Length: 294
Image 1 (tube, rainbow, N blue to C red):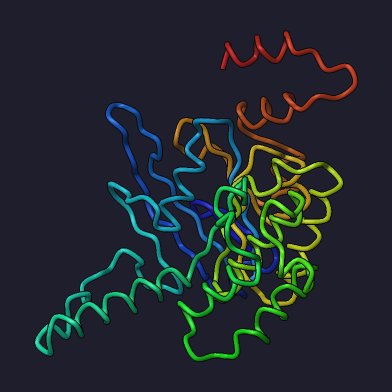
Image 2: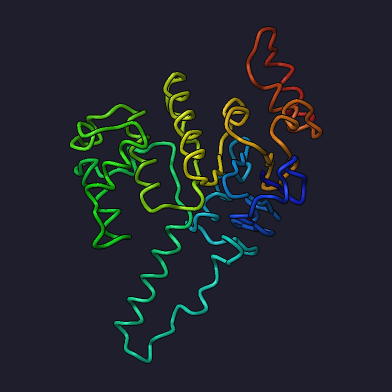
């Protein structure tokens, strides 16, 4: 249900609305092209993986999509609207600076609700002095003032498999998997159209990874949210994405339906990534030689 650089997305392509469209992103740091002409689309309820080694540009792409970094060129659209369009940001100033500031804040909050991000280490993004319930209440109060926050907090915790005991806990009192569930609940609190998961299960034990991935699958089935998975783990990509793009040195080198790309990779770099996964008979020296040749 997702496409990258114009590739087909399978039998459902064309039937689902596009929720996220990325067009011609470029980002350089000095002489380094971190992101070089990256384009892709994500359908409502779709799941797209972006894979590549460290330095491939996948995380920079994600940060641009979320709005944590600015692209030098290119556009990011949600439901066809350019997220970089701030043309009406200053409207209403004729009614006074206060009203203009309020309007600007409302726009920033609206943009933040469109795309949310879950990071690899939730402990760094959670206030160690704030309980889980208070953290969720703070997010809800910011975006939905006046709503029934107590009921919504209970719903969110239930959605990610947590309860009242965890609501009263501080982050340090929770396991890594529980903290990641809290991070997911906080992201879901604002009802985003797209959830970006940047190595979101990489720091977890294998059994906990499976639990979180199953949780994310269930949430997508229930809500129709679109997922953008940023990962180096081809096992995760195989399990949870419909389509995948492979990045190297800031560029997309291959894209298509996940099962097709992983079963019959066309680009030498994609084949190298697959061959680099340890398995019986795996020879790291031959992998290193192949990497040098590439």
